[in-house]
Image (cartoon, rainbow, N blue to C red; front, side, top):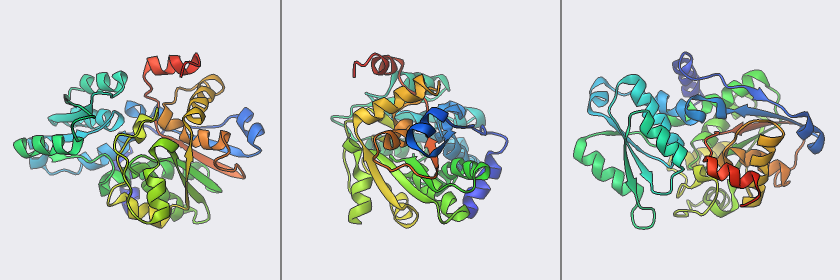
Length: 316
């Protein structure tokens, strides 16, 4: 599988941003460790999802591209598929929930995709998507349970390890597990001694339950501020990969996520969405004990402005 990550890196070379790795002396002093943030909030569309979307869509056949593509997402995957579709001249349809952040909804439409809204209380996004897909013959671009998507997401960690090879630990946000499984493959292939830990919100801990029970758990429409982790469950591809390559899963409270978003903004001067702040939340709340050299994947920065204001004004 690591060979597929390396191939994805070549495919992405002239298309994806080489995102920066940032540090905070204040944080290092506070934790007594060295923390290196791989900032995918500076990736195209403001999140790591561009990597997997481009790696997957660019490999479709000419006929598949001609028919068009479809995806379902709360936001970042939606934007990524929409942008790649725009770049490659492919008709794109995105199925999004009625509670998707306005900034992500607007960006998806701005990239030229047709957006279909579904009601999270009464409809299941996979069923809505399948009906449209069957009617038009579109190719489904899965948000995480696709080998090409997983390989693309793994290039973020690959770039981090190319800069800092001797990481003791890698913390990665987990929703459907595409970023976590791809990152873990890269980490273990380059530095087998690096401990890979997936981070989830306490209120959306289906992957943590699955990891420790060995059985796939699901939580429909979890109530968490980290909208990028509101997936129902891990995928049939990502679950076994996480079981094989990931060392541990940890969870963080909603308040810990909020404090991490504030730290990123006020101390590091970067905008990070709640899902992207999970790694820092785990360190600040001591859900993960900080020691040695720690890599943290910041998955994205697409936070709704109103939510950010509420967080900064302590109204959440």
